[in-house]
Length: 409
Ligand SMILES: Cc1ncc(COP(=O)(O)O)c(C=O)c1O
Image (cartoon, rainbow, N blue to C red; front, side):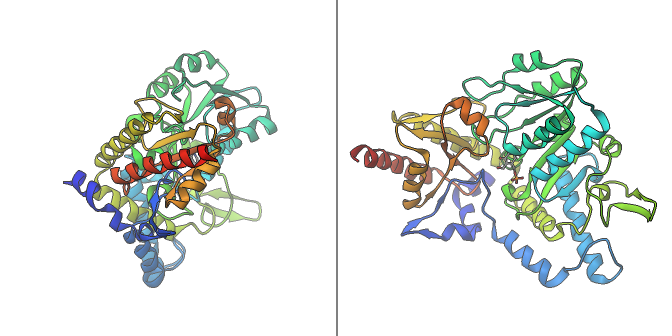
């Protein structure tokens, strides 16, 4: 039933997809950068502002109570969505980038000293590199990077060889934003055996896979609402409650305190401890509505549907001898990075745009990875729940057109 629903008409739920690019229907293959929003989310934001708006947790009047209820209810929805054990484990931030910075700064203060080691991978997004670079530059933390194989999967043997008695934390992507490859759970298992904490960057996985943080047994999991059909300006940090309790506060300000005197302060319990200042309450509410929308389809259905679509597109692209794809892994979904031989990715993206197809071209905030792939940029087609095989067929035809256009020139 839901699979049928996905195949037929989800596109109609997304007003932006009715847009024409020149005279072409928009084919939006840039969900990895940010997802389009269903009407229910767009309308919910307006409703919050029109009917329930107030600051949260700061008053007893009716609007404040309503707004606070909606904000905290969104937290419960996130908790259930990723199967966290407690609402206290869900911290709202402004995006995944802020969530990673929060962990980097507080984790170092509690658990690390100069000379200690963190393991990342060579295919991390800049958002999962720079926060750790700050620790290297400012405090002498040593960073090590797991290599990847030719299909964009992490090399587990290499990972194991990097672990020493100085290693404290492993921070890696759960689903690569360049290859679409899914990280093998064994990496968490190996980390556990070596008493290492694990942070998963779930920016891409949260919208394409059924995520269960309890089953995954990671210590931290981060994602952004805007890639999950929710509003921009809302991010999530999941952290195991005992760990978040041990870590020091991150930002200071209103809302995160218990008591303040001119000599100092004591801090609020979780999750308020990490939510200094007026939080993104409307955005959190919008994320909750997006989660309801996805739950109604069923994350298992989303996963199956997008995997089928990705395999279909990969197969069709592999029939084109002028296309280089950067991962043939079977354990991947929703993201395909590619180049057309002898044509710059930006030219391909501009050509496709004229055809109405939105893909991203560039380094995808993975400059170290581009260096390893030995390319300045790739084009990237990424799929969401509103895409379908007709659009893939249209995209394939456009690639053929693009190739002959530039070959003739
Ligand atoms: C894998 C990955 N990590 C982190 C980020 C950063 O997300 P945000 O900019 O929403 O903080 C992105 C966004 O593209 C991403 O794809």
